[in-house]
Amino acid sequence: MPPGFLFKERMITSTDNQTIKDARALLEPKGRREQGRFLVEGVRLIEDAMAAGMRPAFVFHLGEARDNARAAALLRAATASGERVLEVAPKVLATLTDTVTSQGVIAVLPVPSVTPPPHPSFNLVLDQLRDPGNVGAILRGAAAAGVERVVLTPGCADPWSPKVVRSGMGAHFRLPLVVAKTWDAVDAALTGLPVWLSDARGARPYDEVDWTGPFALVIGGEAAGHTPDAWREPAGRVMIPMAASVESLNAAMAAGVLMFEAARQRRALARRTDSSDSSALG
Image (cartoon, rainbow, N blue to C red; front, top):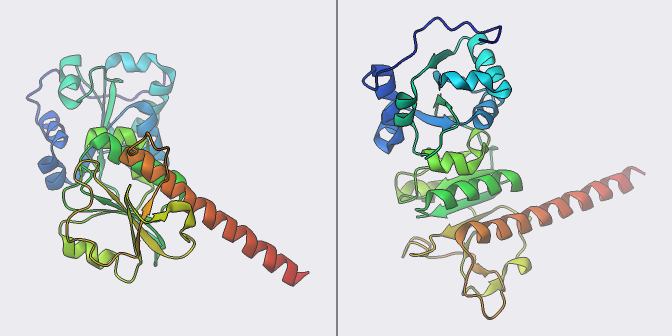
């Protein structure tokens, strides 16, 4: 065993261990809601969570994980900071993952609450997006584009499910998320904001819209589109011009195109503002 490990607890070999049963419950939405926790798998994601200031309740690992330098460093750091680091048998770890090939390290983390700016102006709304891979990919893009808040409507995939978390690649630890239980909660979150709907048959090309002010951009589900009657008075419907032979983009790609156009415009405005301020001072 590499130096620096302080493991004092025996390896867990039973899938009926209560700690394991509690962790296994986090594979389901009900368990996550009841415990206020979720599972994070893989060294990189757990490193990212801890770098963001999160404290795991438990870190489960296979014995062979200590043979990997990066995993060993993570386990030492978690042990040194007082986390419960528990070795488990392969059959036990297998009950805590929905992947075919596990990375051998899984953490139980509290669901984070990332505070948005007082008046978020760059808002993304996911309207009944049910595919976990798409939701995670969009959250990853939102974090990269500088989105200030993401609102998930009723009917969306649970953002704390293992597949969404893996696809998000750390976005969950830094991105303000509002998981709306009701449509009234969605309306309350978006009060006073112009709402733009992404629509393959929309009237306005996305690069002709001014994204520099406050707004909410709504991405609908690929199959069902936007929720009927939910968006009665939008500012407009925005589309992405495409070659005639292409009908549509998937939700994650369309969201990425729209978000990064908004980010480009907002950066350009910031540069112009900085230039004007510099000229005035000169």
